[in-house]
Length: 288
Image (cartoon, rainbow, N blue to C red; front, side):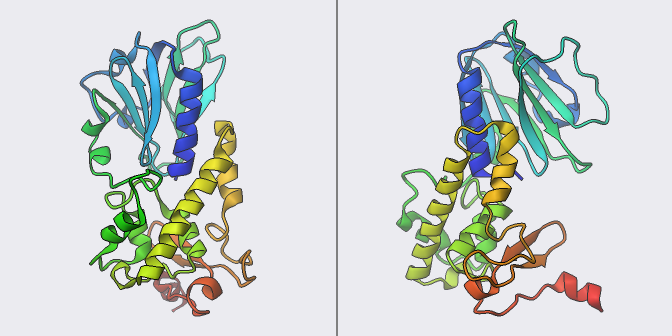
Protein backbone atom coordinates (compact mmCIF):
# COMPACT_ATOMS: atom_id res chain seq x y z
CA UNK A 1 0.00 0.00 0.00
CA UNK A 2 1.33 3.47 -0.83
CA UNK A 3 2.08 5.26 2.43
CA UNK A 4 3.13 8.76 3.42
CA UNK A 5 6.49 8.91 1.55
CA UNK A 6 5.10 7.56 -1.72
CA UNK A 7 1.98 9.73 -1.65
CA UNK A 8 4.17 12.73 -0.81
CA UNK A 9 6.27 11.98 -3.90
CA UNK A 10 3.19 11.56 -6.10
CA UNK A 11 1.80 14.89 -4.92
CA UNK A 12 5.12 16.52 -5.82
CA UNK A 13 4.94 15.00 -9.31
CA UNK A 14 1.43 16.37 -9.81
CA UNK A 15 2.39 19.79 -8.44
CA UNK A 16 5.31 19.98 -10.85
CA UNK A 17 3.58 18.67 -13.98
CA UNK A 18 -0.07 19.64 -13.60
CA UNK A 19 -0.21 22.90 -11.62
CA UNK A 20 -1.29 25.82 -13.77
CA UNK A 21 -2.74 23.60 -16.47
CA UNK A 22 -6.35 23.08 -17.50
CA UNK A 23 -8.14 19.76 -17.14
CA UNK A 24 -9.60 18.74 -20.49
CA UNK A 25 -11.32 15.45 -19.67
CA UNK A 26 -11.84 13.13 -16.73
CA UNK A 27 -12.77 9.67 -17.95
CA UNK A 28 -14.06 7.11 -15.43
CA UNK A 29 -13.40 3.51 -16.41
CA UNK A 30 -14.31 1.62 -13.22
CA UNK A 31 -17.33 3.55 -11.99
CA UNK A 32 -17.14 1.75 -8.62
CA UNK A 33 -14.10 3.83 -7.62
CA UNK A 34 -16.16 7.04 -7.56
CA UNK A 35 -17.43 7.64 -4.03
CA UNK A 36 -19.15 11.01 -4.60
CA UNK A 37 -21.60 12.14 -7.27
CA UNK A 38 -22.25 15.82 -6.57
CA UNK A 39 -20.38 17.64 -7.96
CA UNK A 40 -19.83 15.20 -10.85
CA UNK A 41 -16.47 14.34 -12.34
CA UNK A 42 -17.31 16.60 -15.27
CA UNK A 43 -17.19 19.59 -12.90
CA UNK A 44 -13.40 19.28 -13.03
CA UNK A 45 -13.28 19.74 -16.78
CA UNK A 46 -12.24 23.23 -17.84
CA UNK A 47 -10.84 23.93 -14.39
CA UNK A 48 -7.21 24.89 -13.77
CA UNK A 49 -5.07 22.82 -11.42
CA UNK A 50 -3.85 25.11 -8.65
CA UNK A 51 -1.95 22.74 -6.36
CA UNK A 52 -1.40 19.16 -5.26
CA UNK A 53 -1.18 18.05 -1.65
CA UNK A 54 -1.19 15.05 0.65
CA UNK A 55 -3.49 14.36 3.59
CA UNK A 56 -2.19 11.23 5.32
CA UNK A 57 -2.38 8.63 2.54
CA UNK A 58 -4.88 10.71 0.52
CA UNK A 59 -3.76 12.52 -2.63
CA UNK A 60 -5.43 15.89 -3.28
CA UNK A 61 -5.46 17.59 -6.70
CA UNK A 62 -6.84 21.09 -6.13
CA UNK A 63 -8.38 23.21 -8.88
CA UNK A 64 -9.96 26.64 -9.05
CA UNK A 65 -13.19 24.72 -8.46
CA UNK A 66 -13.55 21.28 -6.86
CA UNK A 67 -10.82 19.04 -5.48
CA UNK A 68 -10.09 15.59 -6.89
CA UNK A 69 -9.14 13.44 -3.89
CA UNK A 70 -7.75 9.92 -4.32
CA UNK A 71 -7.04 7.11 -1.88
CA UNK A 72 -4.91 4.49 -3.61
CA UNK A 73 -5.78 1.75 -1.08
CA UNK A 74 -3.69 -1.44 -1.15
CA UNK A 75 -3.06 -1.94 -4.87
CA UNK A 76 -3.85 1.41 -6.51
CA UNK A 77 -1.31 3.57 -8.30
CA UNK A 78 -0.98 6.79 -10.27
CA UNK A 79 0.83 6.60 -13.62
CA UNK A 80 1.81 9.86 -15.29
CA UNK A 81 1.67 9.59 -19.06
CA UNK A 82 2.61 11.73 -22.02
CA UNK A 83 0.82 11.12 -25.30
CA UNK A 84 -2.39 9.61 -23.96
CA UNK A 85 -4.40 7.79 -26.66
CA UNK A 86 -6.99 9.70 -28.67
CA UNK A 87 -9.61 7.02 -28.17
CA UNK A 88 -11.35 7.00 -24.77
CA UNK A 89 -10.58 3.97 -22.60
CA UNK A 90 -13.12 1.16 -22.56
CA UNK A 91 -14.40 -0.39 -19.35
CA UNK A 92 -13.14 -3.91 -18.94
CA UNK A 93 -11.22 -6.27 -16.74
CA UNK A 94 -7.91 -4.38 -16.91
CA UNK A 95 -6.37 -2.36 -14.09
CA UNK A 96 -7.32 1.09 -15.47
CA UNK A 97 -9.85 2.84 -13.20
CA UNK A 98 -9.76 6.52 -14.24
CA UNK A 99 -7.94 8.73 -16.73
CA UNK A 100 -7.36 12.48 -16.43
CA UNK A 101 -6.29 14.34 -19.57
CA UNK A 102 -4.82 17.83 -19.42
CA UNK A 103 -5.41 20.37 -22.18
CA UNK A 104 -2.64 20.74 -24.76
CA UNK A 105 -1.33 19.05 -27.87
CA UNK A 106 1.01 16.79 -25.88
CA UNK A 107 -2.02 14.97 -24.41
CA UNK A 108 -0.39 14.47 -21.02
CA UNK A 109 -2.12 13.44 -17.83
CA UNK A 110 -2.38 10.43 -15.58
CA UNK A 111 -4.07 7.09 -15.19
CA UNK A 112 -5.29 5.68 -11.91
CA UNK A 113 -4.88 1.91 -11.91
CA UNK A 114 -5.58 -0.88 -9.46
CA UNK A 115 -4.21 -4.40 -9.60
CA UNK A 116 -5.90 -7.51 -8.27
CA UNK A 117 -9.50 -8.43 -7.59
CA UNK A 118 -9.95 -6.79 -4.16
CA UNK A 119 -10.83 -3.24 -5.14
CA UNK A 120 -10.32 -0.40 -2.68
CA UNK A 121 -9.25 2.54 -4.84
CA UNK A 122 -11.46 5.53 -4.01
CA UNK A 123 -12.01 8.80 -5.87
CA UNK A 124 -13.86 11.83 -4.48
CA UNK A 125 -14.86 15.15 -6.06
CA UNK A 126 -15.47 17.64 -3.25
CA UNK A 127 -15.47 21.34 -2.56
CA UNK A 128 -13.24 20.85 0.49
CA UNK A 129 -11.02 17.83 1.28
CA UNK A 130 -12.49 17.75 4.80
CA UNK A 131 -15.73 16.52 3.19
CA UNK A 132 -13.99 13.16 2.61
CA UNK A 133 -14.76 11.08 5.73
CA UNK A 134 -11.32 9.47 5.81
CA UNK A 135 -9.61 12.86 5.79
CA UNK A 136 -11.93 14.31 8.42
CA UNK A 137 -10.93 11.46 10.77
CA UNK A 138 -7.18 11.80 10.30
CA UNK A 139 -4.89 12.29 13.24
CA UNK A 140 -1.90 14.64 13.11
CA UNK A 141 0.70 14.37 10.36
CA UNK A 142 3.98 13.01 11.77
CA UNK A 143 6.05 15.37 9.57
CA UNK A 144 4.18 18.50 10.62
CA UNK A 145 6.07 20.96 12.80
CA UNK A 146 3.28 20.81 15.38
CA UNK A 147 3.85 17.07 15.89
CA UNK A 148 6.23 17.42 18.83
CA UNK A 149 7.51 14.72 21.19
CA UNK A 150 5.02 15.99 23.76
CA UNK A 151 2.15 15.70 21.28
CA UNK A 152 3.16 12.13 20.45
CA UNK A 153 3.43 11.17 24.11
CA UNK A 154 -0.05 12.60 24.68
CA UNK A 155 -1.48 10.39 21.94
CA UNK A 156 -0.12 7.25 23.61
CA UNK A 157 -1.18 8.09 27.15
CA UNK A 158 -3.56 5.42 28.44
CA UNK A 159 -3.83 3.61 25.08
CA UNK A 160 -3.85 -0.13 25.82
CA UNK A 161 -3.20 -1.26 22.26
CA UNK A 162 -0.08 -2.70 20.69
CA UNK A 163 2.25 0.00 19.43
CA UNK A 164 2.25 -1.53 15.94
CA UNK A 165 -1.51 -1.00 15.67
CA UNK A 166 -1.34 2.48 17.17
CA UNK A 167 1.18 3.62 14.56
CA UNK A 168 -1.08 2.28 11.79
CA UNK A 169 -4.27 3.86 13.14
CA UNK A 170 -4.99 6.79 10.82
CA UNK A 171 -7.17 8.50 13.43
CA UNK A 172 -4.14 8.60 15.76
CA UNK A 173 -1.31 9.40 13.32
CA UNK A 174 -1.87 10.05 9.61
CA UNK A 175 0.04 8.35 6.82
CA UNK A 176 1.84 5.37 8.39
CA UNK A 177 0.88 1.88 7.24
CA UNK A 178 2.08 -1.66 7.63
CA UNK A 179 5.46 -1.25 5.96
CA UNK A 180 6.74 1.89 7.65
CA UNK A 181 5.42 0.87 11.06
CA UNK A 182 7.63 -2.24 10.79
CA UNK A 183 10.58 -0.05 9.83
CA UNK A 184 9.96 2.48 12.60
CA UNK A 185 9.76 -0.19 15.29
CA UNK A 186 12.89 -1.89 14.03
CA UNK A 187 14.76 1.42 14.13
CA UNK A 188 13.42 2.01 17.66
CA UNK A 189 14.44 -1.55 18.69
CA UNK A 190 10.94 -2.19 19.97
CA UNK A 191 8.62 -5.20 19.84
CA UNK A 192 5.49 -4.55 17.77
CA UNK A 193 3.53 -6.24 20.56
CA UNK A 194 4.40 -3.73 23.28
CA UNK A 195 1.38 -1.90 24.70
CA UNK A 196 1.54 1.83 24.01
CA UNK A 197 0.44 2.62 27.56
CA UNK A 198 3.38 0.63 29.01
CA UNK A 199 6.12 2.56 27.22
CA UNK A 200 8.52 4.59 29.33
CA UNK A 201 9.33 8.21 28.51
CA UNK A 202 12.65 7.11 27.03
CA UNK A 203 10.96 4.48 24.87
CA UNK A 204 8.36 6.97 23.63
CA UNK A 205 11.16 9.36 22.73
CA UNK A 206 12.92 6.54 20.88
CA UNK A 207 9.85 5.70 18.79
CA UNK A 208 9.30 9.39 18.05
CA UNK A 209 12.88 9.82 16.82
CA UNK A 210 12.72 6.62 14.77
CA UNK A 211 9.42 7.74 13.22
CA UNK A 212 10.75 11.08 12.08
CA UNK A 213 14.05 9.69 10.83
CA UNK A 214 12.46 6.77 8.96
CA UNK A 215 9.79 8.84 7.23
CA UNK A 216 12.03 11.78 6.36
CA UNK A 217 14.66 9.44 4.93
CA UNK A 218 12.05 7.69 2.78
CA UNK A 219 10.63 11.02 1.57
CA UNK A 220 14.12 12.22 0.66
CA UNK A 221 14.94 9.00 -1.22
CA UNK A 222 11.72 9.32 -3.20
CA UNK A 223 12.18 12.98 -4.05
CA UNK A 224 12.50 13.57 -7.80
CA UNK A 225 11.82 9.96 -8.80
CA UNK A 226 9.35 9.11 -11.54
CA UNK A 227 6.14 7.45 -10.36
CA UNK A 228 7.25 4.20 -12.01
CA UNK A 229 10.34 4.06 -9.78
CA UNK A 230 8.72 4.77 -6.42
CA UNK A 231 7.65 1.22 -5.61
CA UNK A 232 11.12 -0.15 -6.27
CA UNK A 233 12.67 2.56 -4.12
CA UNK A 234 10.30 1.71 -1.28
CA UNK A 235 11.13 -2.01 -1.42
CA UNK A 236 14.85 -1.34 -1.70
CA UNK A 237 14.85 0.94 1.33
CA UNK A 238 13.23 -1.58 3.69
CA UNK A 239 15.35 -3.21 6.40
CA UNK A 240 12.85 -5.73 7.78
CA UNK A 241 9.48 -5.24 6.08
CA UNK A 242 9.01 -7.77 3.30
CA UNK A 243 12.35 -9.40 4.16
CA UNK A 244 11.34 -12.42 6.23
CA UNK A 245 14.04 -15.08 6.14
CA UNK A 246 16.79 -12.63 5.24
CA UNK A 247 19.50 -11.38 7.61
CA UNK A 248 18.85 -8.24 9.61
CA UNK A 249 21.15 -5.50 8.26
CA UNK A 250 21.90 -4.35 11.81
CA UNK A 251 22.70 -7.55 13.70
CA UNK A 252 22.60 -10.39 11.15
CA UNK A 253 19.80 -12.35 12.86
CA UNK A 254 17.09 -13.79 10.61
CA UNK A 255 14.13 -11.47 10.05
CA UNK A 256 10.93 -13.21 11.15
CA UNK A 257 7.28 -12.79 10.27
CA UNK A 258 3.92 -12.94 12.02
CA UNK A 259 0.98 -13.55 9.69
CA UNK A 260 -2.57 -12.33 10.17
CA UNK A 261 -5.72 -12.81 8.12
CA UNK A 262 -4.98 -10.10 5.56
CA UNK A 263 -1.51 -8.80 6.43
CA UNK A 264 1.76 -9.69 8.11
CA UNK A 265 4.49 -7.98 10.08
CA UNK A 266 8.23 -8.50 9.99
CA UNK A 267 10.73 -7.92 12.80
CA UNK A 268 14.17 -8.85 14.04
CA UNK A 269 14.15 -10.92 17.27
CA UNK A 270 17.63 -9.79 18.37
CA UNK A 271 16.97 -6.10 17.76
CA UNK A 272 13.37 -5.96 18.97
CA UNK A 273 12.24 -8.82 21.21
CA UNK A 274 15.30 -9.85 23.22
CA UNK A 275 15.93 -12.79 20.90
CA UNK A 276 12.51 -14.32 21.51
CA UNK A 277 10.34 -15.10 18.45
CA UNK A 278 6.81 -13.72 18.59
CA UNK A 279 3.92 -16.18 18.54
CA UNK A 280 2.44 -16.69 15.09
CA UNK A 281 -0.93 -18.29 15.78
CA UNK A 282 -1.78 -18.62 12.10
CA UNK A 283 1.40 -20.60 11.43
CA UNK A 284 0.79 -22.69 14.56
CA UNK A 285 -2.66 -23.70 13.28
CA UNK A 286 -1.19 -24.73 9.93
CA UNK A 287 1.37 -26.96 11.63
CA UNK A 288 -1.20 -28.86 13.74
